[in-house]
Length: 226
Length: 226
DNA sequence: CGACATGTTGAAGTGGGTCAATGTATGTGG
DNA sequence: CCACATACATTGACCCACTTCAACATGTCG
Image (cartoon, rainbow over all chains, first blue to last red; front, side):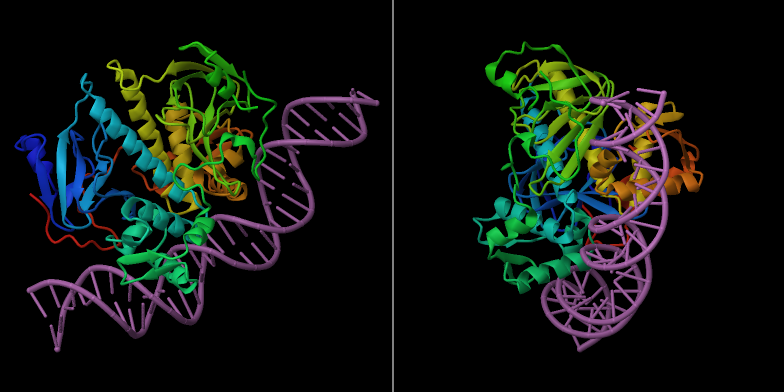
């Protein structure tokens, strides 16, 4: 009922093992000790933060090669298998001199968190869904058809929208000829540039270097430092 | 005009120095190399990600004792002084065996990012502003008066709202007797429990352990692992 | 086939964005 | 010192995008 929690407490799970989870299974729960982290061998994982009101914030989706669960204290999010999943479990080496691998993992966790922020920071449903699809495409395909193994509800809770808005937005993209669906879980991006335009471009790392352009909101800046 | 960028490129700034910035000055810019990070000695700093459309997402505010700028690649956000600020600048030790301090810094950066996610993940303006105030209170005061050195626009860009909504929401809290203002930059939290109720409680780390309670949105979970 | 989860779509309500005006503080120059 | 300019903050009126409520379609698994 609560993933590996019990086993952690008993210390009965050996380190650096391969684990399998079936679709929907809990990998770890909010509040568990964060004494290990995971790399995805195959399948898809979601990390979820549950609010008291029953609201769910998905903080990320993780695919083959991704790492997750790199918190250092106790888990501030749960992890669940979106599909049948195979993982490698690695011990957390707190303060260990050999903390290099873990450092990399932390960096990737930070990347993931930032990606989530930039999705949630977008202003409307079109931008968020477009950005989400582009990220998925960059991660999951050679820009051909991309699998969407998660449900619309998962996407909604990731983007801070409702199922209905996600569904409507996707339908809208189809109607506009931006994408095509082969069933709800398989999506083909037809007009990448159109999607990029909607998403606000600058996906990933391509960025208008230097905060040269000052936006809408003004800025006190009385000439700058150094 | 672009903070330390030029100096970085010339390598003319020695490592581990104390730096001062005046209100509004840029500490580093989006796209700069992330070859150092900072600790706040005094003052307040904001980190900003600029979108192409001129929209600004503030990813965090940093006060005395906080660290920021721990990206490992190039800066994906700029940093600016909200008030006059004194900082310590530390070199980034990529892959250095002595990476312990940096590891801690990374962890704190992750914390900060997560905090931002959980603010943006909240559903409405009341929840976001209440949560923001509680976080500021926890960080900045003995729950007495808390300074809000940033502008309403800064808060808005941090919470994914507009200036107007932030202002209206704060005014609403005052009207409801939840808080009192002594000028726009100084706030006294009168009814902490009321604010917590609005924010959805579970601020910080106090959490309904274990994803036991399954929320609104359903969950496939066909019995869980282990 | 029936049960249940998931997805889509329509209609109606509303929270917060937008537009606009006014208030307030800080600064600058005459 | 006051007149004026500039930023920041507050408040009102209106409108729209998204949520909410509801119905129905589709798919999957027992």
